[in-house]
Structure formats: structure tokens, C-alpha cells
Image (cartoon, rainbow, N blue to C red):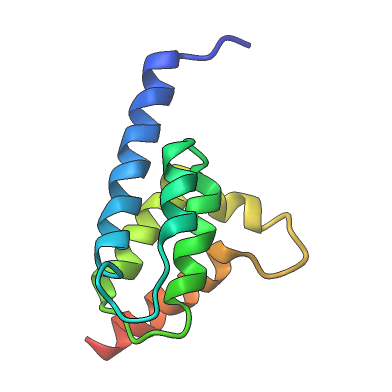
Length: 106
């Protein structure tokens, strides 16, 4: 199986953009440490950066756009399809729940 490197890099760039946009909602909030997220992004560990952002945002009352950016990143990384094969809750599951709750509030 051959991998289209250009398509893969474009996907990474798009995912990174969504994660950066979500991260921007957390920048400057008190008691939020983004150092692990930034380190994962620097090393192109986008799935781990996604997990960190979901974990950081889980207990905060963040706007719908935060969850929309994470939702787009999850879709780009195909995390929802992976979650269907996982018997435990994943960050993608939590993202989907927060997205639904925030959508209902708007």
C-alpha cells in the first residue's frame, strides 16, 4: 500500500489548525497548563494533543467553537470510527458529548 505523502501532510496541517484553534480558547485561562499539549504538537503527536485538549476542556464551560474545532480534528484523524471498536470511553466520545451539550445551549 502506498501512502500519498502530500495528502497525509495536508491532513496533518488541517488537523493541526483545528487543534491550534481549540487551544486558543484555553490560552490565558488561569490554572491551565498547555505545556504537554504544545510538546505533543511540536512532535506531530496530534492524537495525544487532542486527548490533552479534551481533558483540559472537560471540566470547563467552553464555547461551542472549542468543541467544534476538536470535532473537526477528530473527524480528520478518523477518531470516531476508531472509537466504535473500543469498548471504553475515549477522548473522541467525550468530545462528541461536549459538542452535543454545547450545541443545545446555543
